[in-house]
Image (cartoon, rainbow, N blue to C red; front, side, top):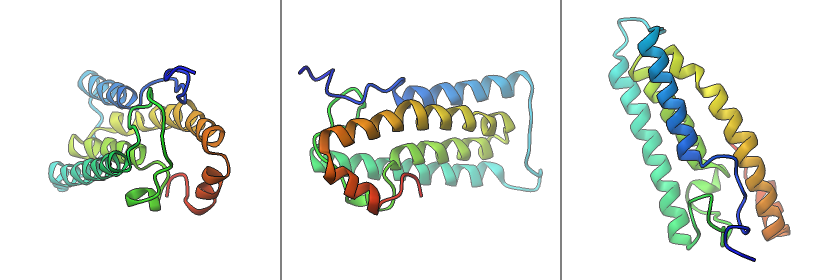
Length: 156
């Protein structure tokens, strides 16, 4: 079996889906600005903090996978079930971090459009990425993965 066949065969690489959501949100905000926050809120600071925390969470998840000896990119095989670090709390910390990163950008740039891109992004990640990864991981690791799923929630 080739390495390409030993993957979840996701519909889109998650960083690309995230970048498309961000670009779409910014393009729509440029074309038709839709602010949603009160002017008195220091949106840049609040959003920046949310974004940095989300980025740190993603970095922690990536470092945890790397340290465990598995692969981060979805087009490479998963070699082990990672259960430490943020994977003790959620089975999908990278995608959760991407979601909150998008929220941080929406706040920082006061863009209802960026909030709106959360829905298609979340649907693509949930159904086009996570569902396929879960099937792949169950097929690859069997009971070990099922036990992990019984202990750790998909999101929060």
